[in-house]
Image 1: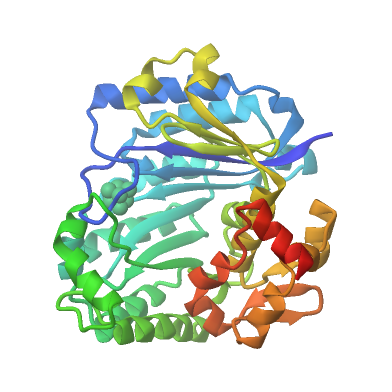
Image 2: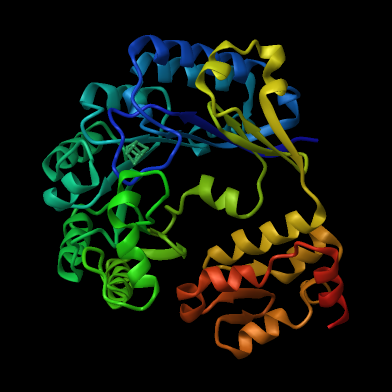
Length: 406
Ligand code: SF4
């Protein structure tokens, strides 16, 4: 029997490092990029038991995949196609597999974008973050709003009909008005999908050095100097939803909005527990109730022989508790929430047996709602999603016991 599989391919290269970014990515010379492409291809070719799966989506992410030459992307996708069966080969519609590539403005012109279309890439995810050039410069992005527009219009000209734009709010010096301007300018372009995240100040980044103190002030309920206040962030968050909904998009996950029929299938699969195979530096996979994580050391990755691939991977067998937690965390991020019957089918226990009074208590506090078979976050629950998720952690047997006897 075949099982659905999503494929993630990590391209860890960027033109230069943005000031807020802690992803596994950075600049690299041509030779490293070529060696990396070869190593990636070796890893894909060495994947065991590929015939047991049918691929429903491919996501080429990063980093900035569009930094690689178009031929390299073509080679990688070709190997994936030769190695795996795609859903569309079975249902006869080749176009039905969602194949996304992330792309940053200034790294792909019309020729490269047109090549992507030719090799079957049917979804483009553009990293914009802000329409304000001052904010972009502060973030350390390589592009301006005008450069983004060029890439966006070129993508439309070569036939992309499914485009996501990544945006980021809560930036230093950003006002609610400037965030609204970004939303208005982006919505005027009619993208099919928008991912709108809030800036997180990550340890080890230049932003951490610059803004950590400010963030601490805000966390203590005091007025920050450079970051938007808590109240301003709340307003940005609220305005995002209002504007995007007014514009005919629907929110299908805490940070993701789409026009009807354009929710990202790859992300949706991930949130609903579809197994995935990740290839590339630091990529993780979820297969057969086990999580695998590739080495984060470039040298190790580049020099490993295919038969050593397992050797440089960390492996973690997931317990049923891990899987139940993940089902709740990821499911509750989606507006559709989690299904009680799906939980029971998967784990042979009910949500109530495992979590006792927790869901009812969250409902009483207005953070969770229940409709028919499904539990989902209320708007207030979305604001406090970290707290709600923490209520579904099942770390110790005592805790599970507590829930069982509640
Ligand atoms: S382009 Fe994206 S992945 Fe690359 S450094 Fe900037 S934020 Fe990080």
